[in-house]
Length: 100
Image (cartoon, rainbow, N blue to C red; front, side, top):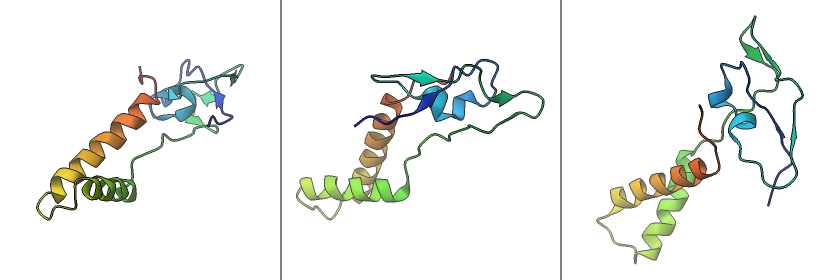
């Protein structure tokens, strides 16, 4: 499912690496700001949209699915946790363009 999101070119913006409007990869219809909303004098942007993050709850839920799929072993909790973190982080990174 795609979301309707106004993108930003990030020109001159020091916050672009942490802004979803800059880092998002557009699919289908695109709209973007004519002029980036970053205010250099104050270093702020009223349209800053923080990047999504992988939460502990996300990792816990994915680790449970992995643990369940592996037959619910009792001695591999850390392995499932780390694998869940890596999978979720990779999935998030795949939806973003580089910060540069």
